[in-house]
Length: 96
Image (cartoon, rainbow, N blue to C red; front, side, top):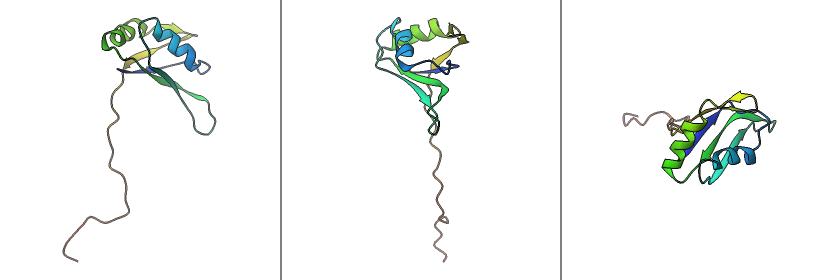
């Protein structure tokens, strides 16, 4: 299960995030999202846990808990909706 984690301290490292979630079960990956230009943390990330029960337990246990001075927001990740890609073409019309 993919878990969304927000309100992270900007100095928190991925290893530390992984350790926090490993207390509640097996963690495949822990990723903190960073700004492309500056490389600075954006304050949120994602954790992948293979066992749904362990993931649900981690969400319940860690949501709204304080880590490095900030209260975490932890919830199941939602799929990002696909937006139509912009093309510079006109819609097809057979009346040309």
